[in-house]
Length: 91
Image (cartoon, rainbow, N blue to C red; front, top):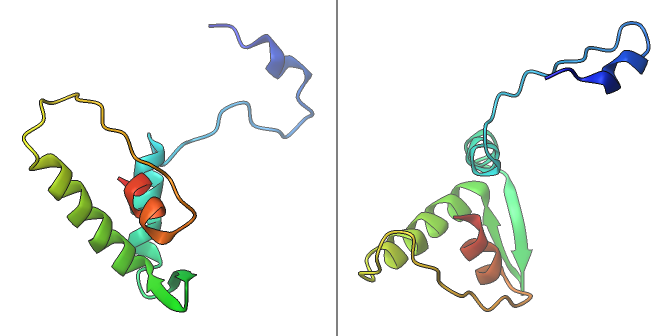
């Protein structure tokens, strides 16, 4: 594919960017590991580290996977303005 838009790039601007991650989930997982000991969020007076968010979101994902739903099933998540919503969307 000819990327005609790169012809107008100034000298020294690379037309190709190496992406270390292939998905948004890969980026999320990488950051959970890189900042494991740092605070991720605070909600209603309770703080969670990146490591805690990783652990809790994996537990929620495992629970959903063990519901017996067929692979590819769609589930609805009712978002709210709370940490649980963030955890469910993480996986």
